[in-house]
Image 1 (cartoon, helix red, strand yellow):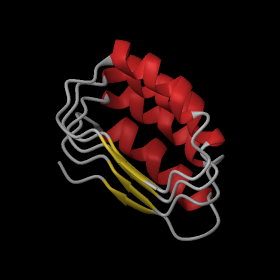
Image 2 (cartoon, helix red, strand yellow):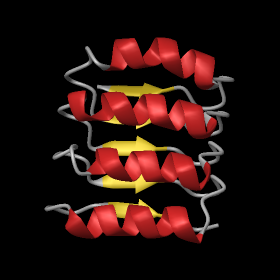
Image 3 (cartoon, rainbow, N blue to C red):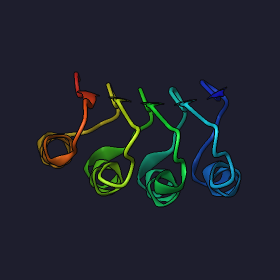
Length: 119
């Protein structure tokens, strides 16, 4: 199953409601939250629920204003997502510190994980 909420105006408040739903979506394979203003708070909410998305393979967070703090929260969650193979955080205000945390998480994770960090 795939869920695309691209450009739907989802911010931290919307992510709070969505995270409860995501925790129960065991068949979710692809989540696209691109072009939403999740920010650090939304990233933290998403990171908290990601380990319960047991089938998630692809996570698109292009242009979601994560910042370094949001990237760090996602990096912590990546280790708990055994099926995740694709992570896209392009143009999400991730600087060197956030990119380093994501790179470390990707390198520590078994299996193939593509992390797109282009600015």
